[in-house]
Picture 1 (cartoon, protein in one colour):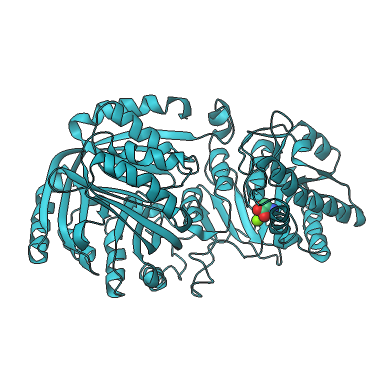
Picture 2 (cartoon, rainbow, N blue to C red):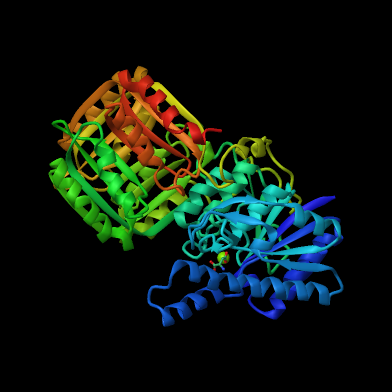
Amino acid sequence: MGLIVQKFGGTSVADPEKIQAAARKAIRAQQQGNRVVVVVSAMGHQTDELIRLAHQVNPRPPAREMDMLLSTGEQVSVALMAMAVQAMGYQAISLTGAQVGIRTDSIFSKARIRSISTQRVQQLLNQGQIVIAAGFQGIDENYNITTLGRGGSDTTAVALAAVLGADQCEIYTDVDGVYTTDPRLLPEARLMDYVSYDEMLELASLGAGVMHSRAIEFGKKFDVPIHVRSSFSDIPGTLITTEPESRTRPVTGAAWVRNEARVTLRGVPDRPGVSLALFAPIAQRNIAVDMIVQNVGADGRADISFTVPHADLEAALEAVEQTARELGAQGVDSNNQVAKLSVVGLGMARQTGVARRMFQALAQAGVNILMITTSEIKISVLVPEEQGLAALRAVHQAFRLHEKPEDAPPPHQGKVQRRGSSNAVAVVEHLRGMEDLLVESVELDDTQSRVTLAGVPDRPGVAAQVFDALGQQGVFVDMIVQSFGREGLASLSFTVNQQDLAAALRVAQQVAQPLGARVSHAEQMAKLSVTGVGMRSHAGVAIRMFEALARQKINIDMTSTSEVRINVVVAREDGSRGLAALREAFADAMA
Ligand code: ASP
Ligand code: MG
């Protein structure tokens, strides 16, 4: 007998008719021979309303009471859903998070799940009940009610599916599934039949907004197939598993995040410990840093840029200004009129020329690239905010995302099979909590060389020109970092395999000369990477890396971050010491 977890979001249970429609879906799944667990969110905008209410009696509502209050939204919907099922003549029982046995830490309003006991739910399922569980909530070790953060019902659903060993987790929502980009921004966006966990993680963090990132992390850790689909139709939606829709396509999705702000420290002394000194105070203020781009500069100094949400810019600047003075940086500047555009695709890891195509598309659209950072499956650029939409359209078009890939498997018709296998449950067993950081690997690639073009004019088309020329010479570029430089001049660094260095330098010189840029390089470099689940949702992973390397007095030359991986480039002679230091720093989180 199958086991299926169905989650209904706020819009899917917004009124009595919708609750009844959801109840019918649960009953149908049971009639098809499944045991059924239903997870529900608060009705409609109930959570927002409760938050408003709280602020009317206290401008700074205490966190514990806030969670007590917000958890009532889901309690209303589980009871109504159970009543609806029973009215249709089937057995159902509602349970709060505590009654299910969802244990969390005590960080109110963003609690993380530590464990879930399955006994009670299993028993009820064995009795033929449809179990209706409240999303978004749990209980800490002192019996306080906690909530998992906005949108947390997704996380409850996938976590329950994981511990119950469900065949799949269906996320019913008000969209048809996951699109190649937000269809409200680009009408040509295409609904995908399949998307991989890693792609979805990057897209979720990019603001695709369809699902809570932590839910996808659970899916990936425990290998739970997640089916995102509309609650208002029976059309199959998007299946999230280990497998991408296409193995040949370099890019599967694109996203644009508007509310970004850039901070740059110019002319920071290039020595061990600088990144740590800079980012630790920011982390202390609980500011989530997004893109981190560090680039070697001229004369032994580096430029470090990063982005934070608009709302955190002032606090970030406060944190940074003191550090900048202490380090003797040459200046700090910022810009909040920027947007981040990213393309994502598992296929990009195995293909050349992807960055080049993206930069070309942007150049043709007249978009100026302010910052670049790449990881194995994502390329992100920072662009002027007013060019964001045009930029998104240009790359969506360039990678033909509106067309279904030729090698896409046939649509899944809603029947879900696990694609890929894992012993995930065993892997995570020794973690303290289910949601703890999981590091899958720490790696060293000591075949790299770095090339830097400093003093590159800040105008559209320059990156395209550089990577075009490299592509024509057949040079495979690995990591790319462009930072915002001095006096409106950017600096562009990339790594290549050492074998390609001579060719890369030749090209770089040719391109640099007419631009008035200077080329420098370092032959013996190494890339250190930490890959895992929760690299960004667990603040401080980058800091832990910086700390471990600083302790070994290892200087970082370049940095790039993504949702699933953080890369740093260091001198080759430091490579194996760096590797050992990182292995030790992440020993407790290793798979
Ligand atoms: N009701 C909560 C919220 O609005 C949880 C959820 O909907 O997933 O954020
Ligand atoms: Mg929601």
